[in-house]
Amino acid sequence: MSDNWVVQNLENALETWNEKLAEIWQLITTTPQNFKGGGIWGVIVNINSAVQAIGLALLVLFFVVGMVRTCGSFSEVRKPEHALKLFIRFALAKGAITYGMELMLALFNIVQGTIGTIMTAAGFSSAQQTTLPQEMVDTIESCGFFESISLWAVTLIGGLFITVMSFILIMTVYGRFFKLYMYTALAPVPFSTFAGEPSQNVGKSFIKSYCAVCLEGAVIVLACIIFSLFAASPPVVNPDAAAITQVWAYIGELLFNMLVLVGAVKMSDRIIREMMRL
Image (cartoon, rainbow, N blue to C red; front, side):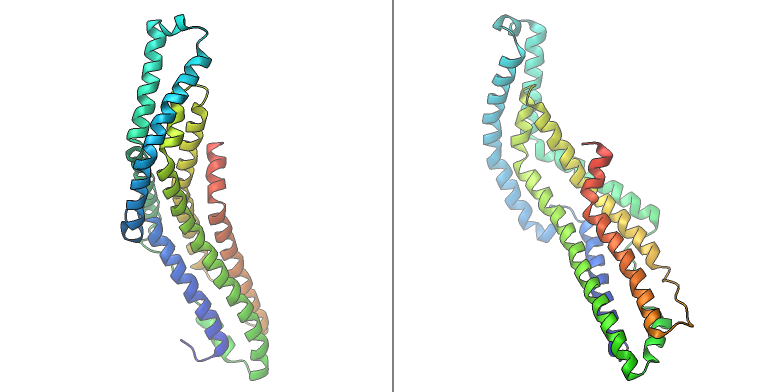
């Protein structure tokens, strides 16, 4: 690391950014069962098992309400085709409650396979490091004391923004795990709504929302890959311009690319929902 205090400001901020980006890359390829050693998953499994009893009780309630609303009279229920339809609906809803966690994990694993395919196709085994170009370091180090004061102010503000955005980025990815856990823990309740035809839209919306959360990982990976490609080509800076102009141009373009990445990650859920037309 350079001994120049201005360069150190930028390098420290970029180091924080690279650390968080590498952590994000690792988290995206981590399953809920292995996240934080698997302790959280064990609690979620216990909660899911406890909520299943509530889901089974609601299953009967939604089934009876649905049967009353869809059947004009009891004689319709006695028809073999109608009775078979009600039985199949009840059995499928019961199966969704009992084996819902396995179905959700299977869906999650399919999405994880898609994410792995994206990483392999892009040729990225890890997040690319964002580094300060040597030309920029030389320009900053060649400045005198008084000129370095203005550079220090610019890099201090830029470094602060970079650090804040890196933490916003990692918090968004952690938030995805929170949503995965909450969906898994409470799944038996919305799955019970499949027992009744009038209430089945609740279950359908739940499945679509869970798919959107799973697919957020693919959007985040794509956003990181695109940013890495941008970061591989440093901003073009006019070497004849003043040092403060060069540094400001570099930091401005770097911050813009980072802001676009953070925005894409923050809106990943909305992007997926738009694609799925929820």
